[in-house]
Image (cartoon, rainbow, N blue to C red; front, side, top):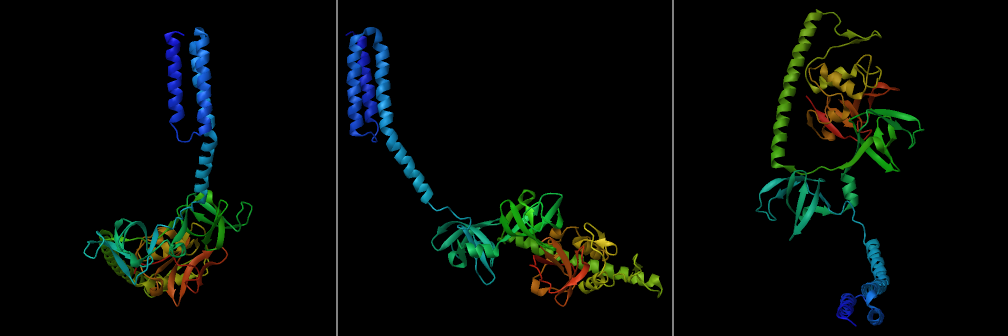
Length: 407
């Protein structure tokens, strides 16, 4: 046996020994079998010098194959065990880290976990935040543009039912004209249509369809044409609160100026009429009084004149036809107030008031719809093609999304 053969055989032995002893998963039987193959390989190396390299490689290959085969059953068992753990681990709910404030009015968000921490903002009752961690009896939270600490006793964490009850599931319309159908099928009856950019309340979601609330009733739309999300009321930072209060004050002043301008316009119109019947006539022969005064009641009185006129999708004519937002926009335009032609956008004009504090002239916003409060728990609105402009009572005949005051 020459030196090269001895060297190669020794290398095979060392390599196999290292491979065989490097894992705790190899059984005693597998180690014994590997040793037997190793001896056989060494004996064959002595036989023919020309086959040294080939036999040495074969020895290593044989040992490697035995090693891999001996691991396979145990590796499979390990993989199965991991899969079992994955399957048994409960999936995390989207509500696990959501906490809802349960307080009389609001709770302060502080910079540190203690009463001495700087106040960074406010989390109002039934508002939501994400809990990032715990420090003693304080939660570190993130909500809106505020991140800080709230004492745990003021929050309810991981209550899915509570989170769902205060959350607001919406569908944003992403197509130019969204068809709303009576059932979840393209063959179902067309219930109504909604323009792009509107935000609709979600009633139900299933199998690629979303049930939404519109003026004509609850109907189905394809999920392909809407973006669904859950909205919560979130914390308000100190800076945001200051900006909001400033904006509300500016809007109040603007409303007062608009009211004065409307009063001046009304007086001018009355003087020009010189005692004759004031107003304009529609194609049907009806006459309408011009806006008089600059109060919410004046807006309501003016709007009520158009009850019975037609509903026209996309229209803005108080006499020949308007849709819901076109009706509100045109009524307020008569008082010198410019408003957007969108029910969702109208939910952000003026300043907000609570539903139990509504006054005549307030804009009442619903899912995909809007009207004007006229008092007596009643709204006037351009309802549907079948009913036209009409009164509806009670005002909360559908869920009220927002109430906005201009005057």
